[in-house]
Image 1 (tube, rainbow, N blue to C red):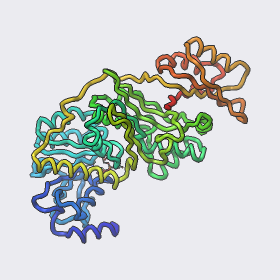
Image 2: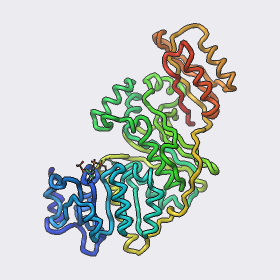
Image 3: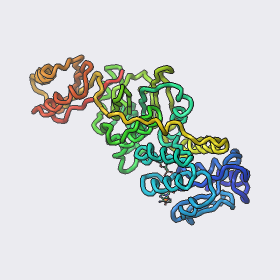
Image 4: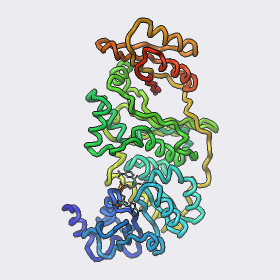
Length: 439
Ligand SMILES: NC(=O)c1ccc[n+]([C@@H]2O[C@H](COP(=O)([O-])OP(=O)(O)OC[C@H]3O[C@@H](n4cnc5c(N)ncnc54)[C@H](OP(=O)(O)O)[C@@H]3O)[C@@H](O)[C@H]2O)c1
């Protein structure tokens, strides 16, 4: 390993783990991309309140590093870590199984937990928070949404004095990379995906990212932390970005917009309106300006209005900063003897709806023939939907002609029956692409 590692060893010394003996004792489970970056920060000698005592990983022998102080215990036995005198367990193995059992076991053993695991918190966050509260332990998961962007800690502290009613974000760096590449180079979706995979921004099977599964898990965590609402991720509608074509960016530009995958949740009374998927956003808006694989979260509060959080949503080092910041927060509270987490007791269970009222962008690919617009207009009129504009750029092949109709605001439920009819028409060569326009 690299020069950085020996520099770390030089500063921390090879004899004793980082931090004085009075410091909070930490065990890390999962020495992968994020785990290694966390250990690097803990071992650089800059933090006196945290003391790494254990690193746990399966088949641990191959993981050992010479730059880590000699008295840090390497083990593949999770139970021995849970039975030790550590005060905080950092779970960084990811996934649900066995991460859930490990985190429950840690809390039941009276250890506080810091995790970056979005699947675990999206699915079991409310229960785990209750368990932590009942054990007088803490559970923090600041790195589970937007990686290094400190939006969850902001919801926990800096914004907890407001009454938030809305959260929206670009939460998936893979989708944002792909969409902003199609936008800037006007390349097909498949080529942008290949590029993202070649650069390590997308996995070989990127379905969770492209089809919205990853983002809606993060939205569920944001709703839990900021809106105090229990949201089962699968109850949120997720729309794929796979159908977005380079031509959609041409038409979006005509409307002063671009396209981004947006995750949004608005709490209105007992209903949480929530949706994840590609949307038109104004080119000059905060969302429209987010490029590459960055993340952006906007919150809306009754008193404080809108706040924005922008930065690196992934990567070992930025994510490790979020994990270590959580560790410092937990260690401080443990040393102050203050362990209650306010959110644990006040979680509502609103009904979930995707029936937002917005203007819409409808893009058709048709085999050209006379009367197409008239037939579409007839269906829209029959469903009492108002056309705002019809856009058709010249120069396309008449056998696969793209054109766009925009609609004045209506609900998704009002639009859906008309969409089904329009997509089934004999001249339609692809299903109609339907995107909300967020102004
Ligand atoms: N990477 C990011 O940019 C990022 C950003 C935000 C959040 N996160 C979250 O951070 C967590 C860790 O991500 P990562 O990218 O660091 O993953 P990773 O590189 O795959 O590391 C996971 C580590 O855990 C070990 N492990 C897996 N299952 C285990 C088990 N049952 N017992 C013991 N060790 C086990 C793995 O060992 P092997 O070497 O044997 O596989 C590996 O060393 C995940 O929850 C992820 O969603 C990651």
